[in-house]
Image (cartoon, rainbow, N blue to C red; front, top):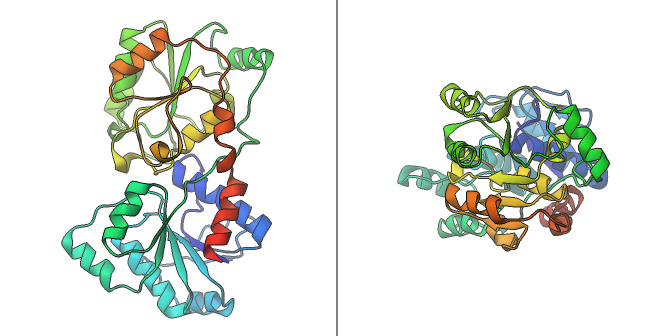
Length: 339
């Protein structure tokens, strides 16, 4: 299998880039995939070929090299499945004569002109992560397969009580504090105002947000979060798993479909650390996880407050739920899909 992507750029602190890095790592190690980076950044050891290409991928030597392997192609575009991504995938198919499958990170909506452009491009398959995303593309006549993304269950794991206390001490968090965590962009589209409301209703709770350094933060929102007593980390956190392991709850308040990839990796990472989840019905989550006492779906910040007021910390079983969604498992399924 050949993998072509423009997502291999540091730092790896946001969903699409982290997903691509982990997926390619497993595809390379276990299935011998040939990796093409097309943004000119070849800092990753297992990139086989690095090109600096324009938006339309006009480079005959690139196409010649891809074609020489006479293999199927997985295309992972930075812009997910925009109209431009479909055109680029079509060009790869046309110039290399390969069967091309595109991996969709985020759903898109298309206007009539965009739908027409997609319709006249060479046909490709799309791996999408949710049933709603697949249904929309199917109505446009696009062939789809549904497959969520994964989690590194070795890096994100469970610690004992003593280690948890030490981690809290390291990060200046009282050992007896009730902590809720969110990891992601500090942007209006993430619906982080919920966290402000929660903090105002439950001032004794420690609320932590770890923001992405690769995405410019919304200054107004950032100031509002800090002013309301929310611990907001904007520096790159090398060992992000440590922050998960000091949390009592993980909250994912995102509503806007364009605000995150369809598989919220942070939710999977929190589950791998066996943390209770409070989330909206976002992306692939309703397709694969049922609500129970450790996995709560909510529609309002008031519902979050009620859960935090009434729920009792106990033996969680969320780690068991992500066993089917490790990166090794997802890579194996993609390898079988591509063929």
